[in-house]
Image 1: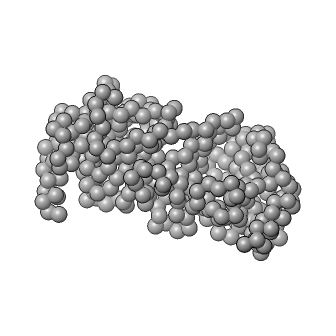
Image 2: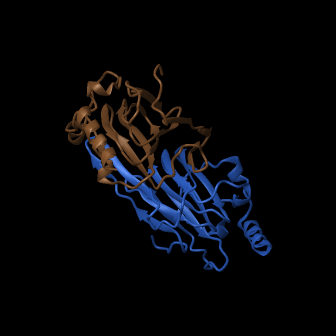
Image 3: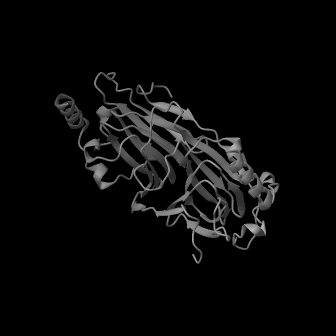
Length: 177
Length: 177
């Protein structure tokens, strides 16, 4: 990685133990310094060349593991006081060398799946519509250096607003609090 | 299933939401009545025709989801006061219709994987060697109606003692407590 990660993003190497039968991998321990206490775990299967996001959560933190396949995770810091370049970057995660990735609230994220993939993730708070914001993944102002290639996007994600609108909405919420 | 499950074993249907991109499945919520508060989550890949177990934990509870492939989960109640037939049974779990399976402490369990499989599981307590007991999976006294077929077993599981010895050990621990 040539760019720095947004503050609070953590990448923890996991250690699959392999034998003749298969493998065993610890995904998460409460005592680890992942900075998340999960209330819920989900699993997501994704077809090749699908892009999910870009989303940002004012409240909840995510902790995720790509456990099948290979993904490029785009990140951009949208918090008050973030660097001008938003520390925008792409973290490449591959199930051959699995990692646990902590994404704190306020850090926008999207996922591009290069091949059929499985990811498992934990959240620190239950789902709440008010905590589900986003912007169009290809917005140049976001600064995420996405890989080249086809990108299949859901109608909902394709309809997401411009980054400028998302930043206005985040600012309104901060003023309201 | 023609036989009843050991008391406290729960089978919770999960609901994959599928769309053009893939699927989304909630695996666990703290607020669900799974009777487990996970301290740790693990993921296990297993080759076809492998049998893991039979193990029993005096202390910790397990909650597991077979999320790839297909397994027969053998169960037998080894707790004080269990029915004479130990409610021994096999629960068939298939990732096409995923379930969350709660296995309380004191219920012996083993897994036979019919095809290459992935299961994800939570534990209520961290690993402790004193909490890892077992017996030979094929012990007839156990009463588990395993499916027919090849069974590749690890040297450690193959060397596990007879059920009678395991029951003696569990009894010694109850007396000691």
